[in-house]
Image (cartoon, rainbow, N blue to C red; front, side, top):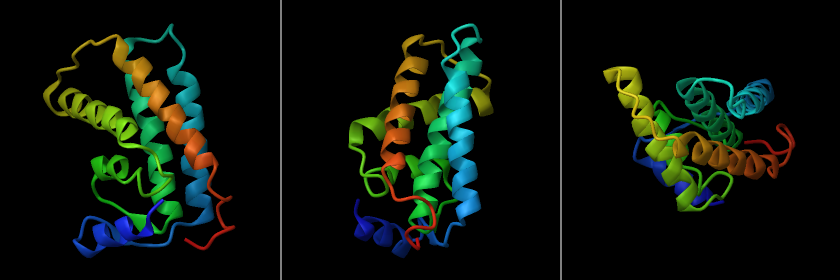
Length: 144
């Protein structure tokens, strides 16, 4: 984890320094766990599994960012910050960045390209974020 990377992102206006509350972080983690569990349900439609996995990954990533005391108005940036928050390597956030592009196309253009491997890759990436965030000290144990 590199606090310097987060400080630099704040300095250039990509992040705002704002302490996260314990309740907020715990709520994001709970949301991530529930959505990730549901995303694994293969009986659900492709689009549902994708949405659930994407939002689980986002909740975990945002929890890590808030744990460090930052906020972003850009959904994509919470994924880009993963090397600086729980310390995940670039390949993980690249999967999430691709999922973000697909999500935007679906949300704003009504175009969800069916790539059956994507939900599984997204679930795998969300699980990696979940594990990494789980290694951070409990919310409130460190003052973000």
